[in-house]
Structures are given as structure tokens and as C-alpha cells.
Length: 274
Ligand SMILES: Cc1cc2nc3c(=O)[nH]c(=O)nc-3n(C[C@H](O)[C@H](O)[C@H](O)COP(=O)(O)OP(=O)(O)OC[C@H]3O[C@@H](n4cnc5c(N)ncnc54)[C@H](O)[C@@H]3O)c2cc1C
Image (cartoon, rainbow, N blue to C red):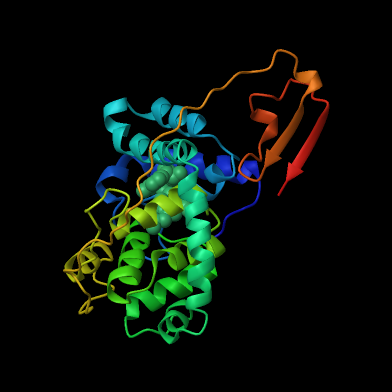
């Protein structure tokens, strides 16, 4: 897998995907054929996460090619990320609680043999070990593999989800505080409380096209629990009238300033925080 580091590469990948593979996306997207065959999905996430191309651009391009009904699944997936970002933005304590818990758990698990085996890809689950190596080599995993990986981590290897989320953030090129943290919470069963995602042998076998079989997993574990609930805060947005008196901060998730909302505005100072 090769993620070129320019907007031109992002646009080239988007065009190729829309022209050649979008047509079959909803039928084939759940299959993980391995790192040498990613034609059934877009692999646009590193570009979208860094703002190199926008969700709107991706959706518009897809709608230029096919009708909404033909594109619905793809558009839904693109907007999941937007939804998760908004969800976390309204509940910032989910992120700070995660960081505080992680600090404690990191200390507790620093010499844990099971944790070490997991992050070295040295468990007795072959598929899991392959995904660890794939993640380290390609900085990407298919969505279904992320779900299986997280589920095995939490319910079969019995490791804390916070350490798994940290491991993903360390290696993924598309690492995204909202989608990643909430994705791990969802698998564990604390995002949609009481509903966990359990990876199963038949599902992995089918959707890896028989690359992996006879995997022994805990397929009946109960969801994790948490006594914390998070209400949405009310955020007020007011756009200042005179931007020339304001500073602009640009973070690593907004790397295409030239196509952004503020491209024609003058600011007092621009700060880059990468
Ligand atoms: C535990 C876990 C952790 C994850 N961590 C991240 C992360 O850090 N960053 C990230 O961008 N995605 C994350 N995802 C979501 C998803 O796995 C990736 O967005 C997707 O695999 C990217 O591949 P793609 O670009 O080929 O996706 P495609 O299937 O081609 O989808 C197009 C775009 O839609 C968005 N998208 C697709 N699936 C999802 C989804 N399930 N949730 C939210 N957005 C989605 C992405 O922006 C993606 O680029 C995570 C999922 C799980 C289960």
C-alpha cells in the first residue's frame, strides 16, 4: 500500500476509486482481501482525516458519477466520521477521561506479558498477529479488520480497550481522536451501552475470503460496563466580524488551507500546530 503525501495523490486516488470501484462498494466493502488488494474500498481515510480532501468533495465526486441511491452506503460511511467528530466535540470529557484512564492503565500494564505479546504480534491467534504486522508495516487496516482486532483485543486477549486505542493511534495514518476512541468504545460495548461487537470465526473466515479459519475466540463475552454517562454540551459559535484582528491556528487535521473556508481571509498571525 502506498499513500502518496500530496493533495494530487489524494485526488488521483479519489478519481480512480470513483471511476473503477465505487460501483461495487456496497456489495464488496466488507471483504478484507489483504494489503495487496484494496480495490473494493477507497483507502482515502489518511487524506480525509488530515483535511487534504474534504468529505464534501468526496461526496460531490461520487454523486457526479452515480445517483444518491446507488451511492447511499458510501456516503453514509463518509458521514460516520463527521458524526463521530461532532459527537466528541459536544462531549469533550470523553476524550479527557480516556487520556486520564490511559495514563493509569499504561502504568499497570507496563510489564504485562499478554500486552507485550499482543503489540509484538506474538499471540496464539494467527490472524491477529498478521493484523499487528500489517498495521505496523502499512499504517492502515481494513474497517472489518479493525473491528475484529479490537474485539479480539478486548474479549479474547482481555486487554483494556484504552491500550488498544492507543496502539491504533500510534500506527494508523488516519488516526483520528473521535473515530478511533469511539470505535473502540463501541466494540467494547460502552458507546452503545450494553451492546458489544463480538468477532466470530465464521465472519472472519467469510470476509477474509478464507484466508483465516479455525480461530479460537471468546464469542460469548458480555459487554464491558462503565458508570460514566456524557450529556451533550451546548456549544455557542459566533463568527467574529473582523478576522484581521484574530489569529488563526491550523492543526494537523486541516492541511489543505488553500481550499478551506478561510483561504481568502487575512489574519493577524497564522500558527501551525503539528
Ligand atoms: C476500532 C476502530 C477504530 C477506527 N479508527 C479510525 C481512525 O482512527 N480514523 C479513521 O478515519 N477511521 C477509523 N475507523 C473507521 C474505519 O475503519 C476507517 O475510516 C476505514 O477503514 C478507512 O478506510 P477507507 O478510507 O478505505 O474507507 P471507505 O470504506 O472507503 O470509506 C470512505 C471514508 O468514509 C469514512 N469511514 C468509513 N468507514 C467508517 C467508519 N466505520 N467510521 C467512521 N468513518 C468511516 C472514512 O473517512 C473513509 O475514508 C475505525 C474503526 C474502528 C472499528
